[in-house]
Image 1 (tube, rainbow, N blue to C red):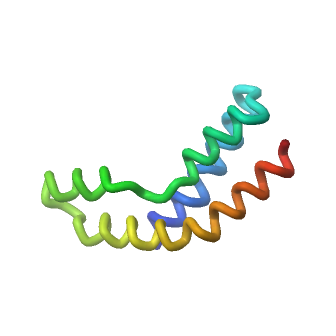
Image 2: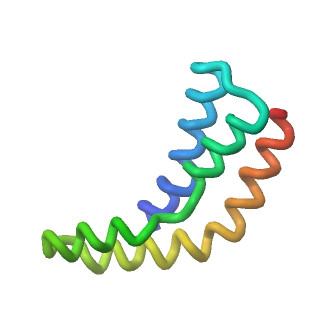
Length: 85
């Protein structure tokens, strides 16, 4: 759960701050980078976990929970991006 929260909330927030206030992005470019950062954990996590035979259960759980939670967090990030412009 902790990894899912980091991936879905903390990472997009850091990207938003750096992209908007650090690099001066706005509009569509800002929306694209934040939306990409807000995506759930992908299958690459599991592929690496299986390849190196470590933390496979954690990788599976992160993919599962982050995909389910993405339904809510995607709407949240879209609303945040609409406010920022």
